[in-house]
Amino acid sequence: MPIKTNLDQNSVTPPLMVQRLPSMGWPYRDEFPEFGDEVTIKPLSFNTHAILVTNLTSEEKMEAIVTEVAQFSAPIQASKLLIQDQYFILAVARSLTFGDQYSFSSVCQNPRCGHIETARIKVPDEVPIKWWSFKTRAEWEKHMTVVLPLCKDKIILTYPTGASTKLHETATEAAMAAFPSDPQGRLAYLNRVASQIVSVNGGKPTDLSEARNYLSRLVGADYDALETAIDNNRCGITFVYQIKCDKCRMVYETDIPIRDHFFRRE
Image (cartoon, rainbow, N blue to C red):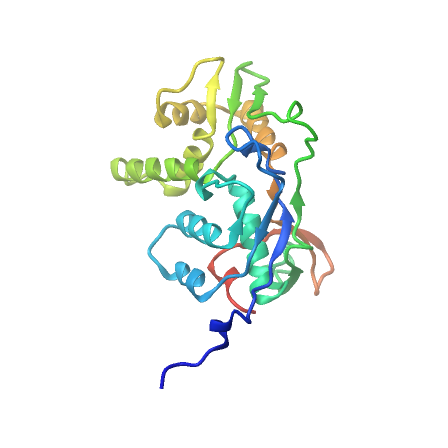
């Protein structure tokens, strides 16, 4: 006897949630003028959850899931979304699927304590999020601009998207093959920032390697100014959460882990 299901009667409607994007949609309106500041998000399904067990990279998994769960007011590809908007969409989809409670382990940063405790937050309500506050197109700046205090270089940077993330991942893999003794974390970090560089003093880098070599020469206040500019202009989930230790009562900051287990039931 074949399966009998109420699904065929369209009696099961998944809950949908309409949310503002952290970017407010500003990065997408040059290509899609009708793009609004909201996205309609639906929960994960067995079909979308299965993406997590494929051999795709983490970024490719994220992009594939966002494509399945997000509905926009314009036909934009997930790869063109800011990484921060993608993370936000995934967090909301996770909340719709498993409920808003999310728990993770944290180690107290008091060197005399080291207590391991369980932190519990509500997603997305208690997740720290930075929203862009631009009100008009005139206020929105397509690129970040920073003038370094020591060398006085003027750097223009773009915001990281799924497409730019794939670019620096490919470059990292190639560099690892050429220089296997170089730690992957260092190359990945340099390539991530290098892929955001549009120009330095009006000159555009010929390739990612040139931008990476430029960054590797920055020190002191110049390096700090560039990092600060990127952090200050970032929107989306900050991934930093304050916790009070259950044992020593010290308040400290920890990173919210958004990994595969984030998409599993508590």
